Length: 377
Image (cartoon, rainbow, N blue to C red; front, side):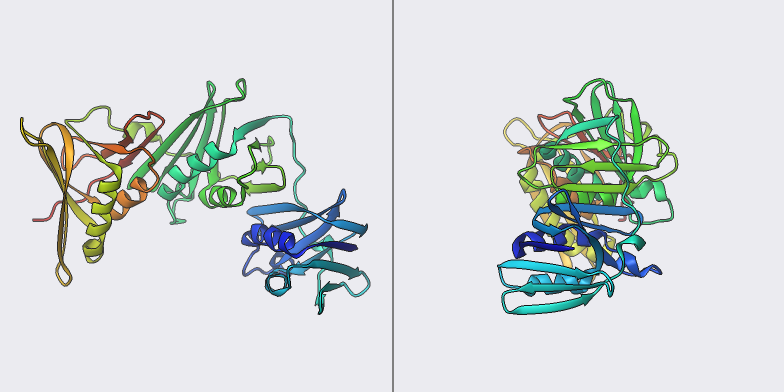
């Protein structure tokens, strides 16, 4: 293999794939990045057997070939090289990669590419085309609600479903639920349903370039995998086996109080409360009071810590229904308010022991259910 490319392109490609490298593995080759020539471009691939990321970068290929290079060594080296042309030559007999750039001359010991797990071919028969901007926004509004506890593997994933021209993503961790829907531009696909690891979707949102407009999604039958393909990037993930809980059953059908507040003001109040709520399992108290003829309604967010002190913020609100006092994990409120982009948000509540529902005002494609905490006196 003999290939040349620009240092900045190589560094960018490595930053995309390196997150899929297995940090600790019984297979040494999983700590490496696969370098291979592919139709006049340089292909970089990494996998931990659950998640695989591939990136293609422009290159001048003089001799085709492939090898796997230790990820940490190679990433650190490329990041220290000058912004210049990088020339790489592989000595196959010794599996040594010579890397030259300006005054820098380096030899890196590699592992034969034959030992690298094969990346799956893309079956493009049953594919779904999604707008990158919408997909990234959808992912951002649901992945944070997935569980980080492996005790229930299905809850560490995001349920992705396609039916009747709509794409739905749902994630829950037992204390909160995020659901986001979107209309599809490619009708006729589906019905489909799969549980995709939340980490895989987070990585997908990270690596998709801003200049890319469309990403194709493929669920090859019988392989237990999902493949996302954009112009220069491919992300392959194992699916999670199991049955996702019936999340529709926990979404309240009605409410007794609806509170509309400024999203930014509510978020700031919650962030301030969290400073004091850290010692008390992040519990914050919300006191909702309807307004009168001459005064607006109010949403009071408060938190108390035995050692730190107490905090209280009052936000003007439009309140329909009964006054209510309810407690939530304020960290969960910060998470959801941070991904809502409408100026105002609605909080729907029934009783202090019933779930609350948060919806962006003016949009009906997103909702978030949050379980209440016990109100201590």
